[in-house]
Length: 128
Image 1 (cartoon, one colour):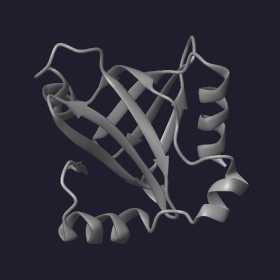
Image 2 (cartoon, helix red, strand yellow; image 1 turned 135 degrees about the horizontal axis):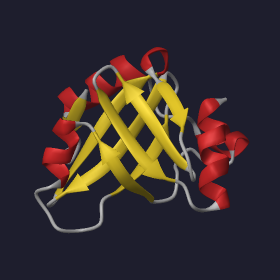
Image 3 (cartoon, one colour; image 1 turned 90 degrees about the vertical axis):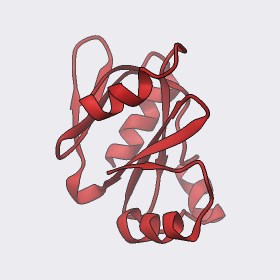
C-alpha cells in the first residue's frame, strides 16, 4: 500500500500500527545498530510509484525504516513524502546483478542500487 505520510494524522498512525507495528524502542534500536538506511537510489519501480516520482525532476531516492512487523520504504515526490508499507509476511526481496535489490509487495515493487557497505549491511539486517 502506498500512502502519503507527509502529515502526522491519527488515521496514518493507526494504519501504520495495524500494518507494520509500532516503532522500535531506543534500546531495540541500539541493539540493532540503527533502524534506518542511508539514501538509496531508486532504479526502477511499479507504475504507481513511477507516476509519483515522475512529477519532479530530482534524483529519486528512498530510505527504509524497520518496524516491529514490517518495513516502510519512504520516498519523496514534489514536497510530499510517500511510503510503501510492507508487512513482513508480504515482503519479498530479490538481489539482482551489480548490487541492485528489489523489494516486492503484491503488485508494488521498488528496485534500488546499494553502493555503500553500510547500505549492504542494512539490507542484510532487514532480511534477518
